[in-house]
Length: 385
Image (cartoon, rainbow, N blue to C red; front, side, top):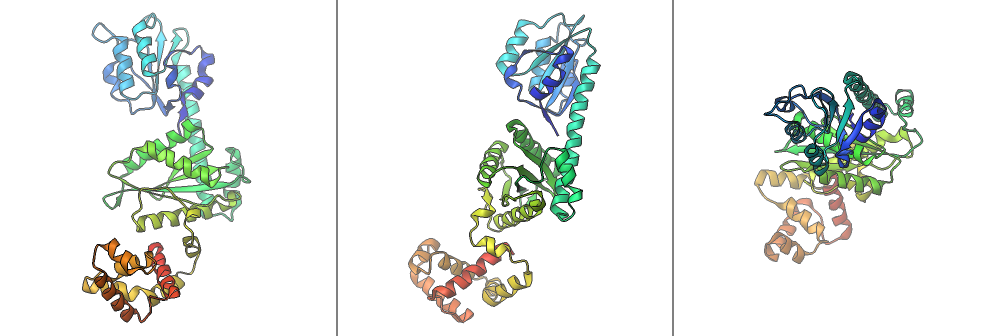
């Protein structure tokens, strides 16, 4: 887990650490720290670290400004300069650069041991990691062992997540070329989402589960969850990847976190089956699908499917026809041959012929509203199977 630089500064400024420039970047996220005494060393930064320097590696060919620029270009979150024999003071050009770039620059006098400051920062980040591990374990236990409250309620309370709050789960699956993205890409997106939540100071938690990213929202209405997730995804800058998102219902308490998670997974599955990777969809938006998704007996679903459209699906597969596509389009246009023909860019006679053929194969009358409803539900079930 990372921490905001502003929060970190509040914990170490009593050790004579002073912010001298770049205040605009105090909302940066910090994940670790690194001693950086030369431009070459700055290339080892992974990003979101605080860079420390005494200036011992600087010379005529490599100025402090060069080092500051290198750290900023390698995505450091800020920089701490030890003022002493190697750096007497921070030059004006360095301060001007940091203010312009919003790159936080701190100083600490030589008499203060930087090792103590670094130890304090490491402790804060390590405690954050401990919080992350404990909360991740608690939420997973709440999902899979909801009846065993002793496995998650004490841990949630210890980390200031009250069991009486409402909880809402969002599940995000990121795919590329039909497969889940690599672990490296998944971790990058996980970090981006975590950064957004930390910066926004939302009462949330982000973790990985089963190759997907799971977000836990505490004390939020479903509409606010949807807005927050939508805003967050805009910042993630998906390129070739497909991103499928499902949001479960807000639960009345922590004991129902697992239910919200399962609902989010059902929504995500529907999004994948319909190839809808463009929108953020919540369980409450699905209308009749919410009733169908609550059917726990899979045999009931399979029997309904077998008695309605399975024969048509198998016929299309065997004969390379598109009767299922025609029927689905016909149902979506309320049984209008004209609208179906226009939607499929074919002549009305073609649609009439195929609808008659479908009625023969299925032994039904599609002019009847109840019959069309019967098959509409079958297609809905097909999407969630």
